[in-house]
Length: 175
Image 1: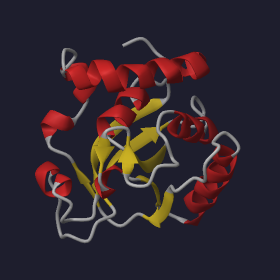
Image 2: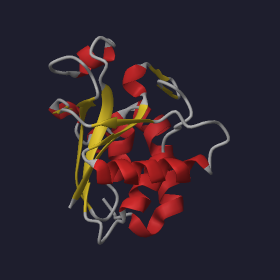
Image 3: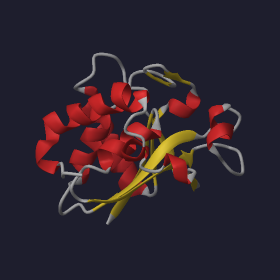
Image 4: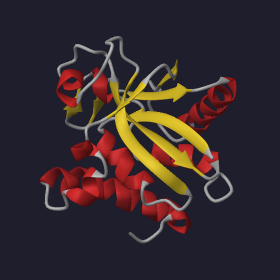
């Protein structure tokens, strides 16, 4: 099993897509990349902790190759906007990849190079060593599935799922 820690705006969006991919064993939303000794949703949103909303996704590379998971990551968020994804603004919504070891650092660097071929603007995704990951509160886990009538889910998350499914349908499982 492989575990990546990725940030691409609101963690609910990444989580909703990752949970629908064959080979994904777990997807946990949380916070990382900050300077505060701990993190919570409201502290991170206040901008005082420097953490990013992120997802730790654990997957089986024999089912879902790492290259494809990383390409999906770059498909479902805009890596060219600094500290912003759509209407979500602030450093906690930054695009970042947190590597656990030199192998992941190399994989992430290669994925960044691949992604740059598909975007007209320069990619601003941060590549950072993973220090501590704080799982988010229970109400944020699998948010899309648990809050189907929330307008954010319909307007922001659903289009990302549709976009990923169109490009990578062979990896999608029915939920």
